[in-house]
Image (cartoon, rainbow, N blue to C red; front, side, top):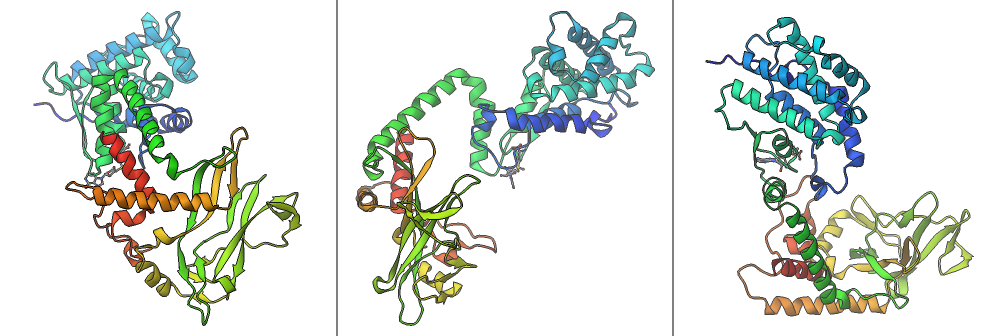
Amino acid sequence: MTQYPKRLIEVDLPIKRISAHARREKSIIHRHISTLHIWWARRPLAACRAVICAALWPDPVDENCPQSFRDLATECINNFAKKAIAINSDFSKNCSTEIWNKWQVLAKPENQLNSHNPQHWNILRNSLLDFIADFANWDNSTQPDYLETSRNLTQAAHEALGGIPGTKPLVVDPFAGGGSIPLEALRVGADAFASDINPVAVLLNKVVLEYIPKYGQTLADEVRKWGQWVKEEAEKELAQFYPKDADGSTPIAYLWARTIICEGPGCGAEVPLMRSLYLCKKSNRNIGLRIIPKPEEKRVDFEIIEKHKNKWVVSDNPEIEVKNPSFDGTVKRGSATCPCCGYTTPVASVRIQLKARQGGANDARLFCVVTNKVKIQGRFYRLPNEQDLEAVKKASLELKKRVNQHTGELSLIPDEPTPPQGRSFRLESYGIDKFGDLFTYRQALALTTLVKLVKR
Ligand SMILES: C[S@@+](CC[C@H](N)C(=O)[O-])C[C@H]1O[C@@H](n2cnc3c(N)ncnc32)[C@H](O)[C@@H]1O
């Protein structure tokens, strides 16, 4: 029976060099399939590749390392060194200088490794670790000689450790997340099994591990084609609920604040719940809101202000200077201070009010619309107008119509209960009991339209 030999990862790993490649990968990996959906805590491919190789390949110095692995690994490394320094090889470009010099030495016939010389086992171990360090480089991840060598080493290790010839070792990742580990396992010649408790992660893994190998470029082409179709159909159906401005600008964001009624004695004004009044805070651009209390109308108005050469002025009328504006919002630790009377409605009352209105998403106050202009770069901020409010009203009527006409086992808008929350913020304390309560009617209309089109 084969005695368990230590794997390379149990004796050493060139962590510093692998980490450098992992850091670089973050800044250069664009348009790769793993960026299709950024999974939280996704591990860099560089680190996964290195860890998998070092976990699959035994340490040649270990007394229990099968001689057949030493023989094949020696052959792989000798050949790799020769390829690395061959004329026309582009290895030197993506190979660290230190390792490149080592390959140059090893490539010479008199320096080639001999698997039966125990003094060479240590050099073999270091060469495998050097190979792993350079293979972690993103630019080498699809280089045919690195791929072939890594796959030969994986197969040699598998068979030397008792794997049935012709089969591959299996890398199992029960918490696969974005799929980095199974993806890299396939790259270095292993089979992979991935699972996850989260269905989004399962889909990501299915795409990377099953659909892409099966359908290749066709999948990318079809996703692009049907994605475009969904976008165009959704635009046609939803355009009337998201109208463009008269000057052709396109609204790209609507900023809403949930509201409460001030409980100050004799007040009763509507208080928009806002943490900050800044709209844009950059070194070269500062835009904010000024609240104008209207106690007699029991509400507030807004004015957009911006910084012009160290002076704050009213955006629509730069002649008017605003001295020492405050950008503190109305909310602090959940309690709300009324701009009309100054009374602070305590957090418990804020919650009671919002709870009675399922979180208050649908009678929130629209306070700003962010737009893109036709030929001018950047974002623009304006106050809402009649057309904006009319579109919101129209959307809610359309949604009600669709809900009434909807047939099917599941409700049109998800009515499953929201899960229990952590200690800091609890949806249920605000009456957001169902998933549907998280969205305004117009958002629900847009989302259910997208779902319908994707299904179609
Ligand atoms: C740190 S992430 C894994 C990241 C992954 N290695 C990558 O590179 O993308 C941990 C994963 O474990 C999953 N998970 C947590 N508890 C689980 C459980 N009981 N069963 C299966 N998966 C679980 C989470 O959904 C999450 O995707």
